[in-house]
Image 1 (cartoon, helix red, strand yellow):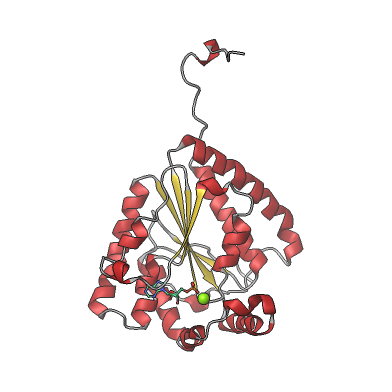
Image 2 (cartoon, rainbow, N blue to C red):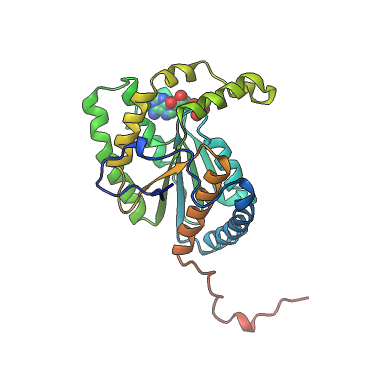
Length: 269
Ligand code: AMP
Ligand code: MG
């Protein structure tokens, strides 16, 4: 199997059929990646400490996927062990009347992490060009303009010190079926099943088309999309943790220097 790009080539129309959701690169099984994931976890913990202490940069992780695509599992696995004080997870649901009375980025902007923090979006402003488009929740002229609004918004964030990492967790329709079936048979997963998800599944191809446009039109050099093969959870977790660690490494963060004259300070008994 040939190598598969994680970031689609900018400017090129994304065709999801070209991306294998079962791709696992050079690894054959979970056993092959256990050590790597563990190492990333340790490194992420150290990097988050410096991020928090330096108070200069912020990291925003955007997770998008079809239902059962693994958004919740990704958050659980990748963030295991990080200091909760520096992390804020936001799950975007059907907008409230108050949210609907504002522009679509209003509810999103206020959840963007501040300096020193990591923010995770479980769904995001992309719902406003995905479910909103497929379900005709606003007229086409309105959602069509949103790609540009999103790009401008993400540019603002990037230029304000926020690193934006966007992940599309790519599962196959078959894998979704398998995961839905688990939700019908495993007692600890019953709560995850929602009949409404079946109506969304029935429009799979329309959603794929909407995703392809979002992945194409909002794949900027400053906030690129990552298409993560997600049929195998262990590979998905590896890709996510590799990417997050690499992004934080690139920030070249430092613990703040001591205040001047620190060597003269003695702590009284
Ligand atoms: P869940 O992630 O399973 O808790 O479901 C959240 C639901 O909220 C999904 O069905 C999303 O499609 C829906 N949702 C999230 N954002 C929006 C939005 N901007 N407009 C309409 N529905 C949304
Ligand atoms: Mg759901």
